[in-house]
Image (cartoon, rainbow, N blue to C red; front, side):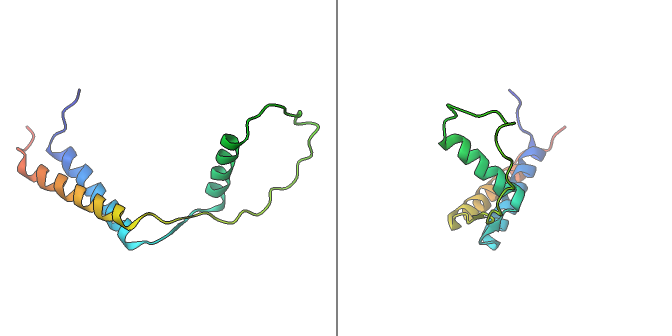
Length: 100
């Protein structure tokens, strides 16, 4: 098991602080078409068991319909949680001894 040193605690804390600040400032994330299509395909794989399939050569390749972009709205408390956790890690790293 590897022990974390002061610099690693500081880095993790700063990343969590910045991620929490981003979640507090932005209300909704809109995914692009490629990400939305990927998520809808993954959801379809989970929902429908694949019992009988036709060979790919027998099925007609229809153009993929235009998919409405998926919107993700994280809860408000998540940003505050990440900010507070990041602040605790940064303060903890400042209290530790310097490496070396």
